[in-house]
Amino acid sequence: MNNKGYKAIKFLILAFLLVSVVFPLVNLLLRIRWEDITAVCSSPQFGDMIKNSLLTTLTATFLSVGLAMLLAWCINRTNIRFRAIFSILFTLPMLIPSISHGMGLVLLFGDNGLVTNLLGINIQLFGFCGFVIGSMLYSFPVAFLMLTDILQYEDYTVYESAQVLGLSKFQQFRTITLPNMRKPLISVIFAVFTMIFTDYGVPLVVGGKMMTLPVYMYREVIGLMDFSKGAIIGVILLLPAVIAFIIDLKNKDSGNSSTITKPYIVGKNKLRDGLSYVFCIVTILLISLPLLTFAYLSFVKQYPINMSFSFDNVKKSFDLGVGMYLINSLTIALLTALIGLAATYFTAYLTARSKKSFSNMTLHLISMVSLAIPGIVLGLSYVLFFKGSLIYGTLIILVLVNMVHFFASPYLLAYNSLNKFNENLEDVSATLGISKIKMLLDVYIPCTKETMLEMFSYLFVNAMVTISAVSFLANFKNLPLALLIPQFDSQSLIEATAFISIVIFGVNILLKLAIYLIRRRIHVQEAVKGGESA
Image (cartoon, rainbow, N blue to C red; front, side, top):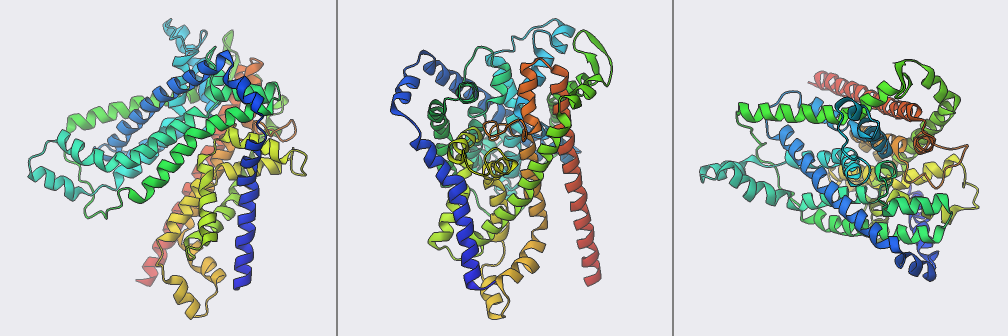
């Protein structure tokens, strides 16, 4: 790849990011009418929507991060066995759409739910209670993964010094662990807050009469086609995410980046380990209840009248078009994962393995911006910007919006991996006459295969479960499978919604299994090569 070709590709990627990220957002802001701002802000329900959204989100965020913190501590600070299996099981809620969690709660704890009928206890699910529980279910795995990663990289030498000084476990936690985690924890809290604040899947199903900003935006745009009011709510939803994004950027450079001299050593404590086992197992049972309920109701005659085993609902679901919409979802997810992998990896290569020029810093900044764009806001901005274009109403725009929505995380994975290589590698290769494309193909890609697998998996799974970014853009022909859930729910097709959730979960489990087998094969090949070279 000569210098001109390198610059041309960089220009194309920059142009792509401008058209797919910056221009739609700017267009969204320009579409807002001042009279609609007054109408929305002065409406009687606006204050209640703000209060409902903030109260429920703050409560769910606090409980979700607290649960994730306890689980991360159990995995990293105890001697329980099967920690890898526990960690995988904790992330199962990420493999189904957020709206499915709401549906699962209705089937379990609704007025006619399985648990409600079995125990005769009505927890008054619809409203605040349902919103908080449903939001916790789908958001805590993200917090768990982030907090586990933080706890894995603590240096034990500091704790040894504290023990010599006679500090108790609680004092060590207060004076060492919490200060080390303070800045990363802020990022975790804002990430979870943004996820819950901008989600409409859970409150749409279990919110009851409690109106939140995302649900109001969804109904205004989908139901009334009022794009201006939808844009106003979209900007409001964007504010917490932007604040979180700025704080996260400030924390990146000032976080705990110390070298680990000694991995954390966990002492023996049978009581602690026993309580951790109980806590982890109970958590897994509780988060598995919706999935088990979906599996059960998919194969009953008619809930709750006739609970005998039957394949009628599976047949009925396929008659309603589940097969066609599953093909749509698989196509969208596969294209999003393949094209998104290529785009994010090459963008990361340009920014991580080149000099910090203005154009590279611009590329990096725009690549990160998608972290601060809620899916529902991005979807609306695409409606306003691309309406009337050749790609509007096709699968292509759904692939594009998913790529942009999930661009930042795989980009950062590749960026961090590529930054670990020696910074003088490019100068050495240029001296030896090795081209940049040869370095990319023969050095960087082979050495970052596992990172690329993780990027592919992230893009595929999220494209399968998302409903926020695509809800405004999908039509009858290109509808993803996940969007059938709110449609079937409105038609009281309970068994069909349960079956769809199980299908999405099954596809994602198969993908995760395939990724695991490929990784295992890579490790075996590397071990064989290592043995031969030795």
